[in-house]
Image 1 (cartoon, rainbow, N blue to C red):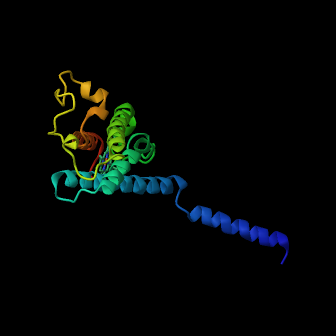
Image 2 (cartoon, protein in one colour; image 1 turned 135 degrees about the horizontal axis):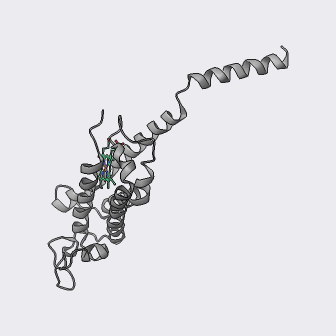
Image 3 (cartoon, rainbow, N blue to C red; image 1 turned 135 degrees about the vertical axis):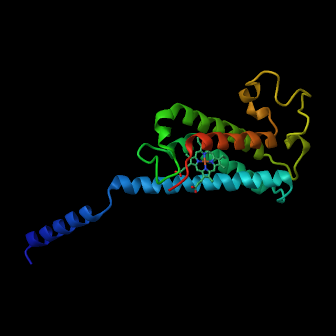
Length: 187
Ligand code: HEC
């Protein structure tokens, strides 16, 4: 066989496969959507594990507690934002196309979640053998002051001062706030 014929055949085959392949953009966004949905499911499993440990429906294990807090912290913030690039929003995904027009708000929510999850993760690194009173929302803070503080925003300034259980409640609020605004029923 002449070399030129072989090359020609290879080019033809390549052209054919390129034409038959789905558009690279469609392919990518499908993978991106699947990946972010998997991340979200992991965050859901992690927050459920933490909530159940606090509720006593699941045995508290320092290692599992740490792992769940780590999952939340790793997947929130910048990582979460990166999972919603332009061109991957709207149907058939559960991400509303409005995210594109409301980037600052969407990203602020993701970063807020990131700060809370980061604070929880930092506390979890030294998770004690059993749940202690100071991890509880109902536990008295060290300084004897109000958990919520008198000034709005005071708490937000330093999530590290909040008990782990309280951080978890605020985290769950962030999940709901974002979903109610930016998540739609999947098709
Ligand atoms: C900044 C916005 C935002 C935050 C914060 C957020 N989510 Fe989501 N979540 C979304 C969007 C948008 C979707 C839809 C994604 C899609 O289908 O492409 C989603 C989807 C989900 C899903 C469905 C995944 C699937 O399989 O379809 C679960 C479960 C979920 N989120 C859990 C959580 C939990 C738990 C938290 C908090 C720890 C959280 N999310 C925080 C925006 C957010």
